[in-house]
Image (cartoon, rainbow, N blue to C red; front, side, top):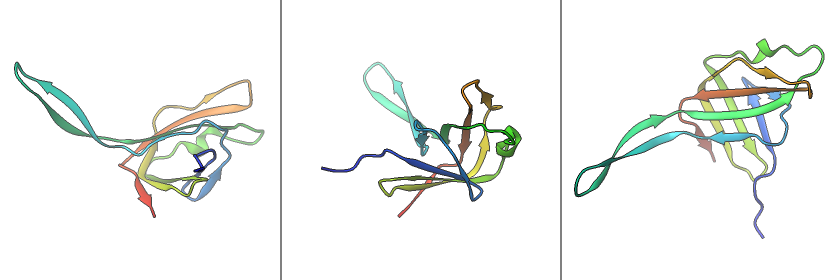
Length: 116
């Protein structure tokens, strides 16, 4: 049996982030849009950014401003060995803080590169 992804380790500018299970990552790349004429379907392409979403522990002393980054390097490493780097990453929206000890973050960046 093959192992599937189960754990994601996230670092932002080299700093480990204590995330909860449920990290969502999209490496970005070419996004295709259908162009439909009367007799064929073609497509156009545009660039889609890499996207990373996660919830992290929000403990006493943490500041959501610590992850208010731009031009950051974010690394996402899965327990199956796949590792991706998001260059020029930035936090998309202000972080949401919950009463369950979590804060939620979304980042975008250039197309991510897989490290082999």
